[in-house]
Every structure is written in structure tokens, then in C-alpha cells.
Image (cartoon, rainbow, N blue to C red):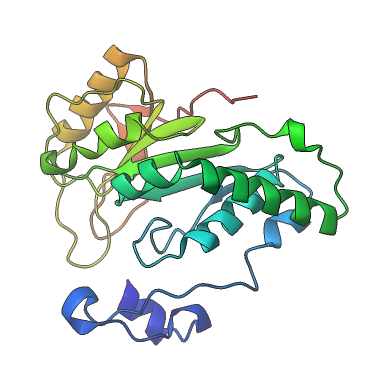
Length: 240
């Protein structure tokens, strides 16, 4: 994907990555010019934050994280979905009182600049409109769910996309939503439908909302989402 984005000439993805750690990709880059865009959107949206990277990557500066969270706080009409593989950092940063104070201070300034009147007392932690999730693609990543349970988030979710093996014995305590999907595109590793069925069954037993995006493979269409005759599109209930 990194090679593809660079080849397409997309400006945000041109910084060279370190070949020893990330292959022919791009280096971590922040984009200050776009971070405030949600403040200008009037119609409520679901926003997948930093979908091509990891918000809690160790090289992402903590003040930058606070700025992003401030935008989310000052845009309560939108729902923001965050997904990370760096669950220990997410757990620690989002529990830090200084970080939280910094977020609210920045949010107040951003709201004022955008012409919004949001009283300081209206904000509470965790932010009601931010969902935090962790990637669990194989059994050896299930430990991230332990970090997730200790992470300040209105909605906690798990992404098993792409699912690369069975996930027996999932502990879904404290998890509100699970998303599954197979790998797609050229060279995609095939997924066994029984893997998805098993996760679906564990979600049902735990009362967790389940969404299945695709079976995966070289192509993906609506039919590639139907699991045993059903399209699974459940979302967790909204948090007020």
C-alpha cells in the first residue's frame, strides 16, 4: 500500500521511509494544515482518524496527539474512530492528567477560533465521540485487548482485519464492537470463513456488536460480505 500511494503521487505520502523498518514506504509525517478540517464540517460524520498510519506510533509527538484530541473535543457532532497497534502507549497517554488538561485547553481555543461556544464544563473524559480500537489479526496479538480494557474511551473496539487465523478464547470483556475482514488485493492471504464464524459466535455470546466487512481475496464485492446468508453491519449504541 505504501508503494502504491507513493507511486500515485499523493503529496502526503512522499517522505521516504526507513528501508530497514518499513520497506519502500514513507516516513511518519504530520499534516498541520488538515488537522482542523473537522471544525468546519457542519453535517455529522464518522471519521476514521489517521487511517493510513497509527495515531499512537512512538514517533508521534504527544503535543500533536493532544492537538488531534482537541479537535475531536471541539467537534462533538462527529464520531471519530481511532485504531492502533500501539496499545500500551494509547493506554498510558489517555490516562495522563496533564495530557487531558492540555486537550481541554487546546479545545477551548480551537472552539473559540471556529466561532463555537462550548463551555469548558461540557467536556468530560473520555470524550463521548471518540472510539478507540486495537488491531488483533492473530492469537499472539490478543494481549492488546488487556491494554484496551484499561484505555479511556467511550467505545472500545477490536479490528480483526485482515484476520489471519482463528481467534479462539477471545476475552471481549469491556469491548463494544468487533470488525472482521479478510485480506484483499493481489497476493492476498486467503481467510477461512470458519474464522469469521467463530468470532461472530463469540461476539453473540458476549453481547458485542459485530461487523463483517469482507471475506477478502483478489476482488471484493457485496457478495463477499455475506456470511451464511447474512450481511453483518452492527454498530455499538451511540454514547451521549
